Length: 283
Length: 313
Image (cartoon, rainbow over all chains, first blue to last red; front, side):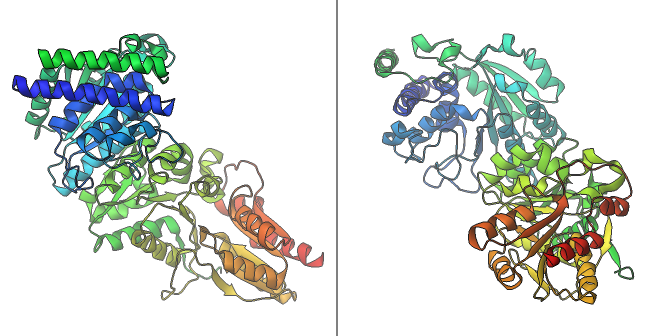
């Protein structure tokens, strides 16, 4: 990745984060914490990694994305809007009664959403079905799914992972957002999922550990994912992140899992992101 | 009906999938380690590359079916009714029902007639669970011929479908030229005194009962209601107006199934006395299917008894 490419992604990620604040502030509800922890990954997937066509969201040969941790819809919606699937101006209508931007991803109302999710544990299984379908049909389609670390407590995640390995779905990339927090507190205290790497490896995946805020790390990880095609093993990317990343008062705070910023907090958050933008531009 | 050929509708399911698979190239079949019992093994033998076993993990299978359907395939996800409608209820509700995906659920071993396995496997709640999901089509065939036609019709329609098939062999009373239509009740006999609306393997019992009642001077308007949702409201209204008395018969809890669908519709549109014959809010138990059905009143004798009681009122 050239430094110009990286800079463009970093600037884009700032916009995605701004969209998270704008939408949750407009909704007076929603989940900013996990949207911000995965904001860099949303950015990388939609602006670099996936073969997609925003002009033709349902194009058959597109790569698929399933947000298994569906409550972080604000992050996904922001990336989709900035990528051109629908107007960025619509983001503040999130969760409004007359809006198509449902609280959790809805594939029938939101352009670019490939699977309706929200009930934790189910999205990854749907991604397995997509990857299996692509394989059966002999199509070169990659399927990406972001799972939360709290979500790993759902038994269905492991059913899905077992079946992905069984069916040799090397076109499936499971991305785990390890921000270490969930609603009730630290994931290690609520229900410890560690060692996550050993678990996914034991279930038959190739496991990669990255910094979830590093585009260089993402580039290397997805290169390995592509190199794995034909090996018959799903790839699991464990990305270490900071919940609430990019907004100082939200960072690493479980309380910001499912709470919207008020007017003052919104202004402060947007000011911090503006400062971040300037810093990137001047670097 | 003692002299009729008997076939379990789960066998019909497997045979229909195999037959359909010859031309329906986008049809795939999923199972959860019960292919031998659900009879998808019949399809599997013919088309092994299109049969995906997900092991004993019904929740994952149901959601994988959702994913497969978005790739242009038409998945038939198969397991016992208890696990398809029961264990995986929320997976069906949120990831098939809510996005209204083109997934067909083939649930075998519905009802008390599962027999010896007992209450843990005798699902008498599946109609109720599946009916509450918006946009879900819920069906239960009365015999082999109808079951095969139903599978084909389910494939041909776009949208989620739940079909319940039985374990026990039951009489095949339809002729091969029978035409099936989703959402349309079948008039088996016109009558004037009491309307009997039955579904699934209770239909042959109701046919027997109608004969006995005719001998005793009670004229039964007999309907096979294979589609429980959407309900054939026009037909229900017609027979309620004509007979003024309705009996529903199903191998399902009296809560939430055909009887409740008919009662709810009639109470709002044409208040009519309705007697619901079904499982009376209790669990089943082990035993041979035939004995259990009699013990739970899911038989022609009880239909006759209830009809006489209603007629004399």
